[in-house]
Amino acid sequence: MRIVFMGTPDFSVSVLMEIIGHGHEVVAVYSQPPRPAGRGMEERKSPVHVQAEAFDIPVYTPKNLKGEAEQFEFAAHDADVAVVVAYGLLLPQAILDAPANGCLNLHASLLPRWRGAAPIQRAIMAGDSQTGVEVMRMDAGLDTGYICLAERLDIAPDVTAGDLHDQLCVLGADLIGRALAALSRGSLDGVPQSEDGVEYASKIDKAEARINFDRPAIEVHNHIRGLSPFPGAWLEMRIKGKKQRVKLLRSKVIDDVSRTLPGTVLTDDLVIACRDGAVKLVELQRAGKGPMRSADFQRGANIAIGTVIGNPDQVNETL
Image (cartoon, rainbow, N blue to C red):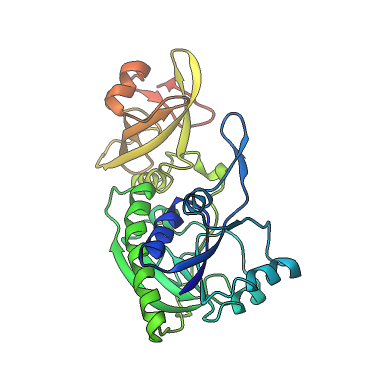
């Protein structure tokens, strides 16, 4: 089939590769425009953009698809179907109607739970025990279309958003391959979404990434792993007399019966008191350095038992 592929981040790349591997003709790729990134703030192409160019596929990066010129250009691809995976732009009705078989979207949740931009992170942060990927026929709403195919996946207690992202990439690529095969046979049916259980996965705000130990340990743990590796839950610590930002990348819930100030360091291996219980910090990352296990981190930081961390007003105060 003639396919227009629309996607931007790493999650979309494996799906694009699956489509190419199945022998479909990808006539065009749409992706978010290059944006400034890195220390030099040079414009950087999206992962999908880079991969498409490696296969000599024409890449289009409009800021939006509302204009007549953009819509005419899109329709001129004469596609059998468009496949949309984490593209990042809402599609006007004229775009949805242009391909002969409409637009299929791969979404990383079990709809209607976690419609929107950050379904993987929000599922973990909410403590969900299961998620999945679904292929739906797109309509004008936000992730409201008919569901065609789905695969479920259990969320392990300590899995991070990065881990889950990689697992869902594999499932999603396979699911799109099956959906396109069914579409080519004329047998890709869909069912409407339930009106019950709707939740919205809003984009992660940088302000919410700051860790707060004055919450139950399970919520702190889910917050850490739900934001790992990006943008990363963070706090400030005083290391060798200098205040530094530290990302928390992995943790474990610890049964702890002590009742002490949340944020208090309880052990040399960085078990931290929470409002209810405690968490052990398993992997951390100092600014400008790579991720490291807590033992390696402590060799350089030497955060003493009794130190209070994570409170903006109490950066490494000792009880």
